Length: 348
Picture 1 (cartoon, rainbow, N blue to C red):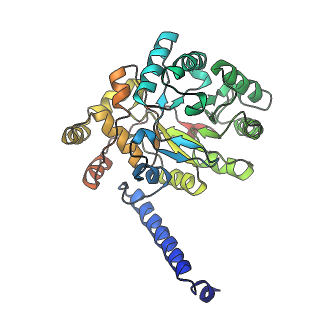
Picture 2: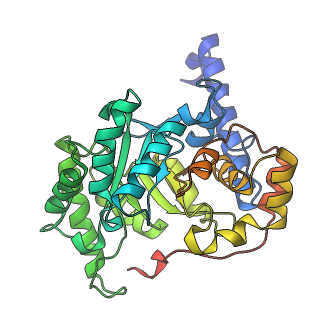
């Protein structure tokens, strides 16, 4: 069979091309273990999209989800942004800067204001609903077969849309259930089945998870009929997800998305004032926030930076520069380790 395969020159080239890619991936995972991965050594889906020659601008770059949808590498995060005027202004600035993805959640309490803002602002920028990628999330209080349908209908109603591009299980645990209770597993399994049904109906174009560990994901992959498209997790220079999670998501075609890339509301100063980050930023004539966000992208994660300020909203998506191997090595070697958000490892 091998001999017959190699009778064709094209087949031979294809085989050795795949072998080269396989070896490159093996080498890249070794680099991951050493914390040395950069855009030259690990061509996962996000990095492949990041380094593609077309489209040229990073805000126009996207990665394909397992549903075939285009998922922008950069989205606008809305956690803690509250109030109709503040939401309107931030969405206005984000759309003006070129963002075409908006991340929200039921627990953020801003879906309705986001929906109203989009209906007013999309015509201003000659955009339609199909030009915008909206992500929302299931509240932990809405886990379970009896709640998930109404929860999704609520998000659709508040946003004023007929479909949501991506809907995530926000947290692997259910509100009011002890962290060590097996009831969490039962309820999130029921929730996923409900999301699968809503995905098949077209109301949720893609479904995924947030804060899922390797254990949670492996459990889900054993029973699901629709694989999660995205796993949104905490990831920053100070808090790095395990190599095992990265490898599992990469092998299963699950896109990793980073939140708290800048340390969140309370801890951003500790990342932004890191002397290594400041030195790299100064050498490139960019801001420390831009360095931190570009680093996350080059590690193979999409990003959803958030800000209440027009200038920072614009800066956070101006990431059309490269962190070369030396700069990536310096950033990778930052030794501070600090988790800034909740810990899903505690959820059974």
